[in-house]
Amino acid sequence: MTDTADLDEGPVTASIAADLLSTEDLMDRLLAAASLEDYLDRYPTDTRSLADYLACLLEENGITKSQAIRRSGLGVTFAYQVFEGRRKVGRDNAIRLAFGLGASLRQTQRLLRLAGLSELYCKVPRDAVVIYCVSHGASLQETEETLLRLGQAPLAPDGGR
Image (cartoon, rainbow, N blue to C red):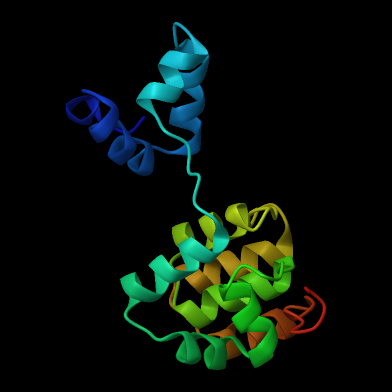
């Protein structure tokens, strides 16, 4: 379990702690809470929209929207609509967008969650390839090549709308 005792003092620091704790740790704390309200007061949920999170990732990773879109290989109009919150994105395209943003594995998983999609799961061979590639800093092109080399379907730019 992550040691966050020093962060566990109140609502302000609890939001920092919630960001640092694993989902499993948060689940343990939810189940052990005296009340649901106590848990929700202590560990705020992530209420950001996907569009807000994408804007944060642009800033955090020091890239422009046009750079992220170009690196993702997504259609420009579609991608801008996703950034503006006017279009939903499918799982493959969300993953492509994460690559375009230079997202870490943790950022990629959060992007998928905020898009209402399933996170990458290491027991699924295709997801395992993507997890490995993201965590080792591979580019989208390198990831696509690895997927194909290992007999897995590529991240279809059109299949995930």
